[in-house]
Length: 252
Length: 283
Image (cartoon, rainbow over all chains, first blue to last red; front, side, top):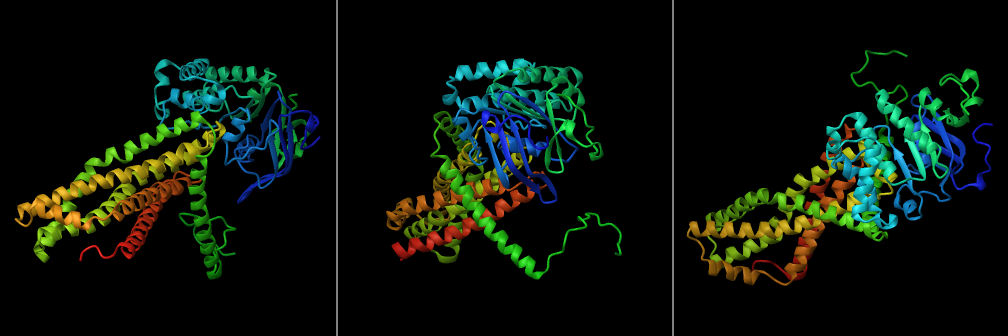
């Protein structure tokens, strides 16, 4: 089945993309594409380099405005210009960016604590809770005490990526988006990230979307996989062999 | 199709070179988008203050105070030096060219230094110092996906990034203008004394005659407006960066140029309006 999975769209309050179109001046990312991600499920999105995986993930996370079509997350339509709306409605989303996206003028701890402080009243947290939770998230990704107080520019790529993961984890998201989460990491750190992702995959409360072309991660997660191809979102095992990269492979 | 040697900066083969009509159309559309974008930034920042969220308000307030410190306090040495020389220069010119009496010098200082040079020079200093810093910082944040990352965390960048910088610039320009005025007057007075031209009593008498109640309104109108222009334009042009770091210096430069233009025009309009209401400054 192309462009949709088998779950009826109204039986969940996961993520629903309908008739979506989006293009850059010289590249079409989505052409009337649809996708339903049921609540609590985990999907992988792959595609050739430049196909628009990251953009699709931004769209599914409600960070980018569609030209046509609609997106709902947890039953709500996100407004990219008012990102706090979703948080106020209790929809907690986490996004791990390919390059980290850490605020360069804040140290690692402040980066992780920022969203917790900003939404402290919504999350019912005190300042002490914020610090405790931020440090706990950094501990989970094995950030040392010294690294916590460094600016992102003074940290290695792998550490920055783990801090970015901790920042997203700290808000305990129910919708989690990962953009190439293990690219550029050494084997040990990559394995840690895979382990964390597997944990979220098994959490029935968390809806997870991972954009990656790494077979090792796709195999490790072993979840339903989609491919972004020529503006369409296609189930991986439905891709015709003639379509070229990435290689068709059933992982369900 | 004949092809010459490849340019150092080759264009996409399908890129069309626009004709005159297309260029005019593009410029018109660009001006419209520019105006619309500027208004969108201003309204976005203002409306973000009406969003609920006590914790968010507290975070934004702390950032605004930090920005005030950066824009105001850290600029004091630079403003001091400029104010000393501006105040002295005005008095030297008046003494050597016009030989004005002390009370007249006081009046001219009110008109020239307090009403004109203090707010405008301060705004220019803040635009050059903090405006470029704001535009560059925001441009880099945009290019490094930091603004997108804030959105992903449910943080409104208008509230978290733009508003504190606008408030910081407004308060910074206000405080620095007062400081500039005080330093320039002191410098002018001391220069006058050294040149044997004025007594403090005569100078003070001139101030008292020249200052009117409308000056308080003028102060808030000028400093508030100029500070807003600095913060607003710097944030807007910084956020105009899309994805490439090479856009950052271009936008920072544009931010400063547009801010200076905006400040000079705004200052002239407010001055004209003020004298239309209160009459000529020196009789």
